[in-house]
Amino acid sequence: MIDQKKFHDCLRKAGVEFITGVPDSLLNDFCLYVEAELPREQHVIAANEGNAIALAAGNYLATGHVPLVYMQNSGIGNCLNPLLSLTNKEVYGIPMVLLIGWRGDPDSRDHAQHDKQGRVMPALLELMDIPCKVIDKDEENAFEVIEWAVKTAREQSSPTAILVKKGVLEKGHKRAFVPEDSLYGMTREDAIACILKCTPENALFVATTGRATRELHALRDQNSAGHERDCLNLGAMGHASSIANGIALGAKNRLVVCLDGDAAVIMHLGSLTTVGKVGSTNLLHAVLNNGVHESVGGQPSAGFNADLTAIAENAGYKTVGRAVETEEDLKASVLELLASDGPSFVEARIRKGIRADMPALKIIPSDLKELLMKNIRQGA
Picture 1 (cartoon, rainbow, N blue to C red):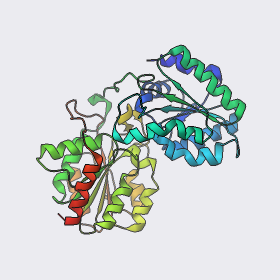
Picture 2: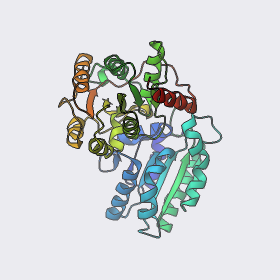
Picture 3: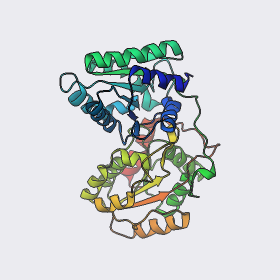
C-alpha cells in the first residue's frame, strides 16, 4: 500500500489544498488519513458525489487552487450533471482532480453490482473528455500521476481523473469498532431483528446498500425463513426508500419496510419529500443511524448532526417525535407507527460494527428479483 502521508504530501506539493468527497472502501486509508489530519476548511465529507463536485468548484472559484474530489466509481452517476454542465471546459472550465476507487476493475473479481460500472469506467471518462490515468502499488508512478493530474487539470481548465486499483490506498481491512466508540447499546442487527418481530410475516423488506443487506439476509436464514419478501439494494446507495416507495404503491395490500442507513438517507434526502407527497400508508421507513459510513471504513457521516426524525416529519411522515435508542423503545415505536396512518418513519440510534462471524452475502440478484416479484403477485 502507498504511504498515505507521502501521497497527501505529493498532492499538497502539486497545489491541492482542498479535498472533498464520499468515502470508498478502495480509498479507505486515504479517507481516514485526510479526515484525521486536515482541518474542516480543507476537508469535507459530502452528502453525495455531485455535492462534492459543486463544493470543490466553489472552493476553486474562491481560491484558484485545484481541488481534489474522491469517490467510488459508482458515484460517477451522481456527478455526471455537475461535471458536464458546470466544470466542463465548454461551460465554466473548472479544474479539479477526481480520485476514483475502481470497483469492478476487470483485473479483479468483484460483486455483481460493481462489474458493469468497472468495465465501462475508462470509456465513460473518455466520453466525458476527462483525461484519466491508473495508479497501482508503484509509489513513484503514483506520485508522477498526481503531478500529471493536477498540472493537466490546471492547464486545460477541466477535471482530470485518477483510477485507483484495489490495495493501493487501503490495507484490505477496515478500522475496528469497539464498544467505547459509541454511546448506544443497540446494534444494527438487534434493530433489524426487532423490526422483523414487530411486523407482519408477509411484510416486504427493502434493505439499503452495505451491511444491512447482509444482516437481513442472515437473520432470514437464522429464522429458517425464505428470502422471497426481500429486496436487497446492493448498489444505488441512497435509493432504498424510493425503491420501497415504488413497491408500496404497487403492492398496496402489503406493508413495505425500508431498512435504511444514515449516510444513505442523507445522500438523497429529497426522496423523503416524495414519500411524504405520495403518502403511501403501507410504508415504514426505518433509519438505522450509527453516525458513520461504516461499510467503507467508518468515516463520520452527518447522521448525528441532523435531526432526521424532524426532517422526516416535516416531509410528511408520521413519527414518534424522536430517535429511539433501545430495543424496547424501538418495538413500542414500530407498533405505534403501524397503528397510525402512514407513511411512517423511525430513527434508531445504534452502535457501530458488525459481528465477526456475519456470513458473506452470496446471492444472484436476478434470482432474488424473480422470487420477490412472484411473492408479490401471489399476495403471499
